[in-house]
Image (cartoon, rainbow, N blue to C red; front, side, top):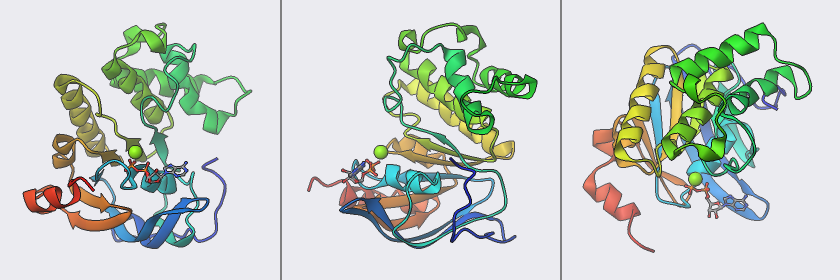
Length: 244
Ligand code: ADP
Ligand code: MG
């Protein structure tokens, strides 16, 4: 799905921007959600999309993953691989009768096709993603038997198996205990150091504070962007997290 050429996509240039979004509007049929978003994602950084439930974080990721078409505006990508998308845990059907390894292997389907057997290259990518997430020992376990933190690592391994330099994750630390959250945050930082551009949607402020750049969303609008200490201020947070 990610390999389809789309109009309006151009090379974002060589000034270090991996993605450039200009005046973007997007949503669902009859339901505008994102309004006039303009922002850049710098290559080889971690960005956090921060905001309360319903603010539009998942919709932004859907647009960046090219699963949701914008209604207007521009989306420019620097040359690179199609993004890998790690959906929110729970959106994936934890009850599916799949083992951890089968789940990670699904990361190769986009390039291999559903009906073709995985080749040696695919299997090597799956092995290395599983090693990286320390889930090799869980290979034959059913997804439903795993802890939340283990299942999240399986999903991130599925994203890594896609072998992209651009990794999008929806709430990767939400609902996990502090130790599992910290482990994932450290891992995502390591991926950035190793050459991946990481964008995560989160309402975990600790995870957001580990990002290089935060994009604060409220009701589908970008209300602040910049380094965490400038964006995640008590005033800004209390303003957008106030009950409606
Ligand atoms: P967040 O991820 O920040 O919680 P979302 O992007 O999921 O926010 O949702 C933003 C808004 O879009 C919400 O009002 C939500 O109800 C609406 N929305 C999300 N998905 C759909 C959908 N598939 N169809 C219609 N509306 C949707
Ligand atoms: Mg969401």
